[in-house]
Image (tube, rainbow, N blue to C red; front, side):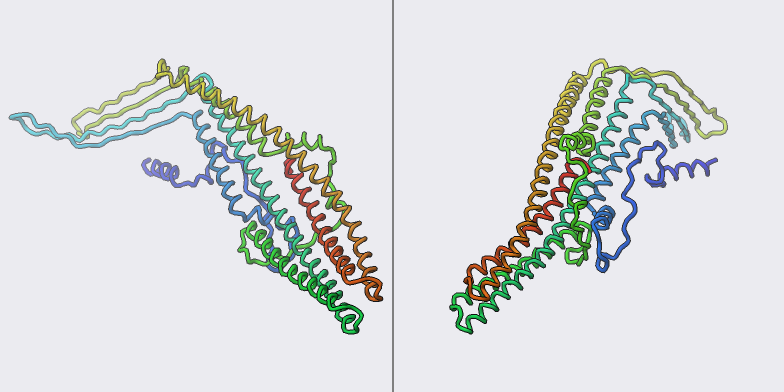
Length: 443
């Protein structure tokens, strides 16, 4: 018998918390389906980057641990519905010396088992459990919000890196165009067809475009480091990305009704769901505070054994069972103020929920307007690029035959370079504004 009791006691201390969940407190699970790819050799698309970040980002992992800790408090709250049992035991050597008498020594042993079970407390226990459940749901929604924030950060870094890479390609194309203009000005200067000023202006623009290439290379490195850190890699890790397709499916949104989008955000935004659960918890705390002023009824039982370990001595057994009523009649008005505090906190939570609803609607409205502006800007940028390309072709032919000067040619080259860059900026701004719009509605 002693062996079995020892094993039970040992298991109660040795089993890890994650392996034992008798009260069903743990619900939230970590991200599943991690991507097994070599990021240094394989080209990754956005879905790959997102899945890798969900499985490797340390900040998100820390947020998940916070959720699990909050879930553990739910187990603590549910334990209030179970009885509590306590065992105590003492063993000691006592001696008695009577004046002019002999010394006697006893070796008394005593043990006691006590059990109590809360039966009724005017809803206080249920309110504490309800409040804890609401806090757990709020923590889970905050974790969900952290996931959404990470997804937006990854998507932003991914698109910024692609935009920087394409901008570098555009800058190199502009460098080639300026080089072509510079070489043509050099040739015409050697033939005496233009002045030295033409050659020097063309050379200046060419060298400026060379500087722009260097600056764009730096932007690529900076954005590459940002993306690498988000997936828990060192910033100097080189990542190969797959370019997105330029089509309407990538740029257009599924629902173009801003009122419907705002209504969807009120139902799905994790920050708002977290605040609503915090409000529920505040209401439960108010019920708990009021219940503290009411009596509680518990069932109690105890059994005690006393023995002095002497064969010629009797042992004693004491048993008791009954109901115990506890009523805090007066506690210096602390329970009253605690209830009033809980009432104010509940009203505060209600006001915060209302304010957050308006904030969420405004975020959706602003994100939608930014998206529509970006969509129109991208459409215009394509037309501007077509015009700039034709203008450059005409200006270069005219300069070749001497019908225009170097200023007009360089102006056409600059307009072409700006048009290329503006199209790249407009395209990725459209994708970023679409990502921000989806984040604002909770997707």
